[in-house]
Image (cartoon, rainbow over all chains, first blue to last red; front, side):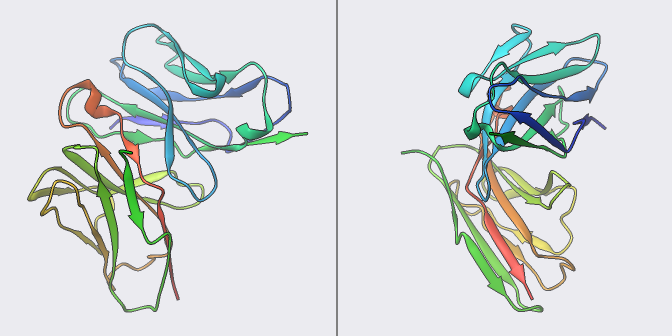
Length: 113
Length: 115
């Protein structure tokens, strides 16, 4: 079965600093990959997705992610953190075929003023 | 505005009672999903439905039941058989076929507390 690993359940960065949230997946065939954001007591909102087109994917709110097949990674980055970025972020993977969308356990991002 | 609504936002029940969580979508999506979210565990799939009058168990279906009588609606019943029902429940939907079906749209969630 497909799995996705998010390294670091909690990440803290200073306002204005680089945000890097890590996501690795297990698959011999590049799957579809997603990053979602969840603000407290709300549902998930899609940030960006990789669907086998460009390896560098740009999303909303200034976030982007790069698909690296050799590293089986899809890390999320933002050059300059803003206080409003404080939230929980989930990486998800959808393999080809009938396997379901699988979510990572999430990374809670805290922004330090 | 198109979207997914879940009601109520907060729900409190006594142990031993069944409770039904509502999920409605006006996105004209074929597929709908129910997830359970607990701290540190990500999202776990309870049930999903790809067409009306059909649904499949997810990874943690025990103690839950669903129905899909209309395309727009996918209610979830948490039964008294669910041993740890207190959690945040999320409903999602996606288009029926092709790569666009892999992207799921989420409702705002219902926080259920059972005491």
